[in-house]
Amino acid sequence: MSQITTAMVMAAGHGTRMRPLTDDRSKAMVTVAGLPLIEHMLRRLEAAGIERAVVNVHAHADHLEDYLSCRQGLKIIISNEREDLLETGGGLVKALPLLGHAPILICNIDAVWIEFVPALNALMAAWNPKVMDELLMLTPTGQVLGLESQGDFDLSRTGQISYRRQNRASHLYCGVQIFKPELAKGYPLERFSRKKIWDKTLSNDRAFGHVMEGYWMHVGDPQARRWAEAVIKQARKGGHKGAR
Image (cartoon, rainbow, N blue to C red; front, side, top):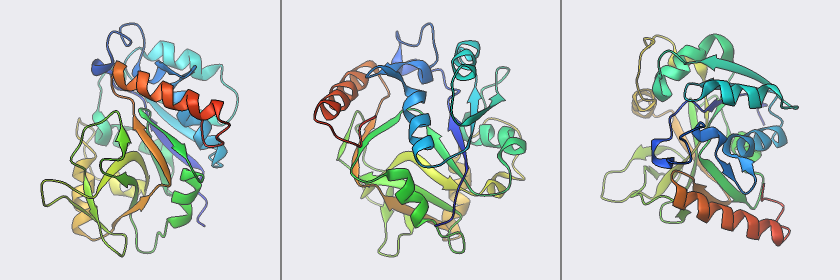
């Protein structure tokens, strides 16, 4: 298994769909089952052996930074987007000097899950940099909570992914992936989606998917938050080791 030690945690968004919970805090600081969303992800990263987390900040940045500065554990480095929210692609370009050259994890803070096996460790075990430039964590479309979606990618028998061609794709992106930072070099420092990078990686047949073993939840609005809280609390009550 190729050891990955750095992650980028995407935490800069306004979380407009989460209002009114984000009126006085970033989406990353909205609590679910007693923990801020970002804390759920940071604990997953620590359990997987990640040593450094680069966190981009924009909305309610001071509040988020205050929380992170008091936290013990993995080293946290701030990528400051206070002046301009750069979206997922531009945020990567901004953070490049902080990320290093080795492959990293990229994680969205609104992704939470109950895992049957350690999901991040399994993703890293499936990583093969000789044939892969990106490896996305996936879940079967329709087997998620908090998100109505027709799916994102179809998954081949060899593990390669392609954008859905029909009305419904076989799998949904879980908001976590392995990424080679060099892929973001050459792009301008401006607002753009990481999809622009995906387009190139997919066209080169270097994008792959790994299906997680667990129950994935997207926490994008107050109702989804309530559902996720209920699932996590029930899993904890039952002593499920995969509940954070």
